[in-house]
Amino acid sequence: MARSKREIPHYYLSTQVDLAAALARLRAHNRSIPVQDRVLPAALLLRAVALGLRAIPELNGQWVDDAFRPSDRVHLGVAVSLRGGGLAVPVLRDADTLGLDALMHTLAGAGTRARSGHLRSSEVGGATATVTNLGDLGVDSVIGVIHPPQVALIGLGTVRTRPWVVDDAVVPRPVVDLTLAADHRASDGATGGRLLREIARLLGRPESLVPDVSADVVDPQGANRLGTPPA
Image (cartoon, rainbow, N blue to C red; front, side, top):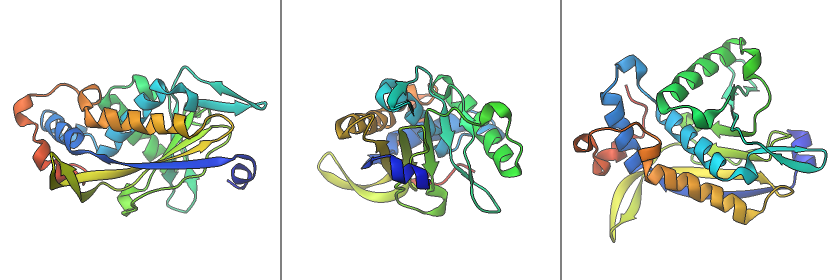
């Protein structure tokens, strides 16, 4: 981390995203599957990030030998806090190709192995971008430090019910703070803004994130109650 702050010219961007539609669709999906297989909102957010990086490849890759080398595959590092202190960053290979249920399964397994010190060799190293999520600790936003040789780190805060303007009316909505720390050698603020905008677009129209569900069980107006993980 010290090397990262010394050598990488960081720039930072942030935005807030209304998750009403995405969480309503996730709730409907969870109702259609066994309880033990239910998907946490964290997996939904990771899928949006992975697809966003695929769409904006200028932030997906590594800085090597004074040049940016984009990757045509999205290997998403996920920061996991360890019980004894410190971090492990298991890598979800080809995260953009995993369906939501598969991504949840992969995330849960990697997190368990990281905390027990039994990560597989395929889960260590080679990430093309990293996500850090402190939402379960009630943190509103995360301003992260890039993991060299990557050029981007996406931070996710807690999903919190906030006043939001919808059709000229102020209503309560589940909102998440989304932040980006990026390497100014590889990209600029306009490119970083495109990534945040693409992630927000995917979460606002979650048909590409969550498997098809019956429209009559999706209730965006009630989605503000979904900020906590499903039981």
